[in-house]
Amino acid sequence: MTTKTEAASRVRTVLEAVKNQIAKPGGLKLNEATTRAHFLNPLLNALGYARMDELEFEHFLPDGKTFLDYRLHVDGKPRVAVEAKALDVALTDKEAAQAVGYAAILGDEWTVLSNARQWRLYHTFAQTPLAGKLVLSLDLVSWDTDAEFDRIFDQLWLVSRESFQAGDGPSSWVTSQKLDHELRHSLVDEASAEVRYIRKQLESRGVSVGAGDVAAWFRHHLTEPRATSKAALYPLAGASPSPMKASSPLGSMGASATAVKSIISSSGGSHWIIPAGADEGYSAADHMRIWLSKGFWGFGVSTPGRKGIKPGDWACFYAAGSHEVLATARISGDLDHEVGPADWPGPEAFHTGTYKVPVSELTWLEPAPVLDQALRMRLDAYKGKDPAAIWSWLVQTTHRISRDDYLRLTGQKTD
Image (cartoon, rainbow, N blue to C red; front, side, top):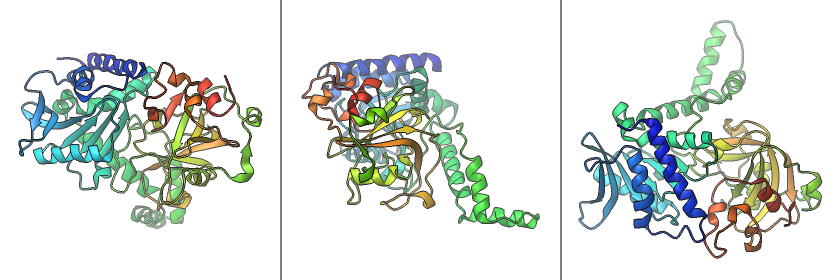
C-alpha cells in the first residue's frame, strides 16, 4: 500500500506538471480527454484509486445516455462521484449542479468537480442549496512553498482511499468544522441563547456581567489561530463560498501612481492581487470603498489563497469590469476573525462565514492603473503566455504575485 508520504510526492509531481503545462504558450488549451489522461487519472491513482475495482471510468446513469467521468470505490462500495472538465474550462455553479446531480442519482455521498487546476468537494446530500453543499474549494496550482503544498495535499487526502478506510472520508472532518463554526459564531454573539445562558450561570455564581461582556471574552479568546486552519471551513447554509465582493476609493484619499511611491513600502512580506466584483447593484469600486474604509477586507471561508496571506504582506485590489487596480494596503493582522453583525459593512445582508483581513496603510490610486494587454505582457506572471489567450486566471480569485508585478500593477514600476 502506498504511504501518505509517497502519495504526497506523487500528487506533487502531478500538480507540478499542471503548473508547467499552464506556463506554456497556449498551455490551457487541452481538451477534457487529455486533461483526464495526463492529470486527473494520475492524481486519483496517487490518492489510492488504481485498481479496476477502485477506479471506474465513465459510469452511465440510468438514462443510458449520460455518464459520470469517474466513480471511486472503497472496499467494493462507491464513495465519490468525480466529474472532470477540460483544463481551460472554468468551474461554475452550472458544472457543479450537474456533477452533484449525477452523484445524487447514483446515491454517492461525495462529489468532486475538477479541471486539474481547481478541485471542489461537495457533500451531495447536505440539506442546503448548492452553495451550502460545498465542503472546500482548492486552487491546485496556487502553491509555491512546501507548507502551501502540504495544506492543499491534506485537503485532497480527505477523499483518499485510505481516508475512507481509516475513518469515513471527509465526514468527521466536516462535522468538526461545523462544530467549530457554530460554536465560534454563537459564543461571540451577545444575542445568542448560548451567551445568555452563560451570563445567567455566571450571575448565579456572583459574577454580574452583561451579555456583551461574555461575548467579548469569547471573542478575545477565540481569535487565536485554530488547529483546524489548514483547511477551509465547511460552508453552512447561507455562508458564501466565494470571496467577498468589494468596492472603491474615497475621493479625498487618492494618490497618483507617482506619489504613491513615497507612501507605499513594498519591502518584506508576500504580495497579492485581490479581486472585487459588482453585486446588489453596487459596482466593484463601491464595494471596495465600503469594505476597505472599515479597515478590513472580507473573504469567504473557502476562498483560495486566504490561508496563505500573513500579517506584513502587501495587497493590491482589482475591480472586475473596469479592469482597474484601485487600491493598495498592508495586511495588518491575522485572518481568523469572523465578521460579525455589528461590524458588517454591507451593502449585502449579513451572513456568516466571512472572515476579516485587517489592513493598514490604505492608499487609493489615482489615476488607477488599468490591467490591459500591454500591462499584462509586462508581468512576470504572464511570461511565455499567449497575449490572446485566456488570462482571467490571474484575477478570478486571490492570487500571489511577485514583488515586481505588485510594483507594476500599482504604477510604481514602468519597465
